[in-house]
Image 1 (cartoon, one colour):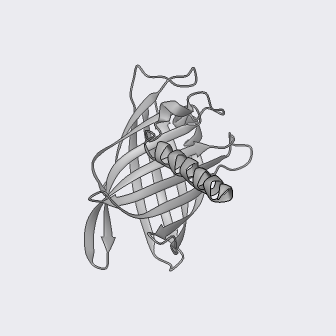
Image 2 (image 1 turned 30 degrees about the vertical axis):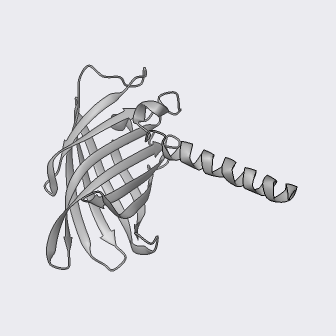
Length: 193
């Protein structure tokens, strides 16, 4: 009887912990403000950057693999990220982001830095915030699938690991329903901090 009570007590404690964690607020970039190294988009996305990625469906199965070659440049607070995608099936795509660092925000000295961005296949304007080693990017992408085009929401997080490597994880959803995830590892060439 005592053993059953101990098991029941442990189960209740586990359930209470799960419920408390389930009620926690989702992360925001400011949560990472103290994390190093500081992710400065203008510094990282400047010059050539390569990324290797996967798309996983709702079940977690890898549905596509791809490589991205990027040419990045900035003039003042205006940036261009020219992305060339090559998928494992040989398909190629291109996306050109036009970014704007908003004035009066944080940066290497700390705080939250805000950005906006546009691209031809993005609906409206993307919005982003950087703090510490993290950057969060929200946007709606026109995604072609089997001859149709769908507008899919992206909740896109990037985490700077060191001066050359950045990890990117994006959740794709439609009408609030999770469709899958995109995971990428970005790398700058050696000697190009």
